[in-house]
Length: 260
Image (cartoon, rainbow, N blue to C red; front, side, top):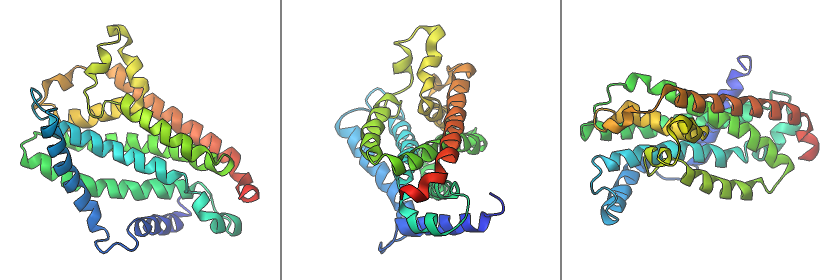
């Protein structure tokens, strides 16, 4: 990968440019989108009274949605990481794994721009954020999950064109099974205390909890009580997904040219 770093960077830049191609605001949308996100969910939470009796619920919700959007963008973009580069795949000799990796890296950059606005917002509303220095670790874990999923989906979509339709349904189910707009405690109350780790087999459960723990722990004391073993479960699942993705991609990439 180091030998092909220049191609990787070119593809990352190209993916970023394509996302905002034809847009008059361009990359400014990366900063404007989270601002609009906060405003929309502020109105949404007020009208439906989700924040009644829940201090700092808006901050809780916005963090969860921002984290989920990063995953969702990677999942959707991964469908065309290979399919959208047919000429490159057929005519150029290079490690095909660069294609999904470039897509994930481009979304990481976009996600970091989103966090610039989100962290400013959390600072203005008085969130303590005393563990902010650990944020890159959680981001790396989520990027690992996204890369593993991108490898699986990008190769699967070459051979099975129904992948796009299945992904839409699967993503919706995954969203509601993840503690994005509700706390993880709502899942844990249906499980015996010794089986709490089962909820963390969904890696987004551990990832969303960690983001909130790092940014809101002092403001929301209930973010203190998840055992380390549960978080290790989510981390392990992320690594397993990456290994499966690498294995799947490496064993199917030699047939890309024939199928495409």
